[in-house]
Length: 173
Image (cartoon, rainbow, N blue to C red; front, side, top):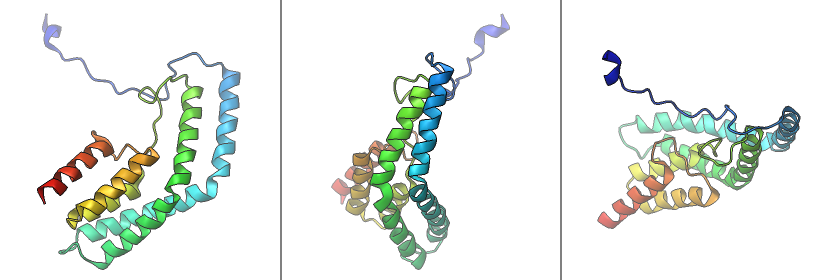
């Protein structure tokens, strides 16, 4: 009787839980392909990770200044632009990795399995331009991210919502 009003816990889908039947031999073959893929892109991935950690450090310093127009902001934007130059190549890598991971675990679509990760440089540069009230520039970076397939920005609503919000701010100017 007391259990009638308990709410059922929401469970997050675990992409590591196979949803289809994938034989061990096939999965091992896919893992070998993943290793080859990761080695092929290793240098660019390392460069991207180095940029990302430096960008996060600069971004934190930039937003905690009294004025958003500061040296940290400029340096962060420059580094984001360098990292964004790597984005088309990394988009290809992430799509290939996503495809292999999903096939290894028997996922038929992105919602059940592994998606393309957040590309922080697009998020940070758009946030900095938005704070500077340079909405068109911020929108340009968001649209570029979307064109490459980077739909996730770390929020529930994603890059599409960020795009709509920026378009709304542009109309209000």
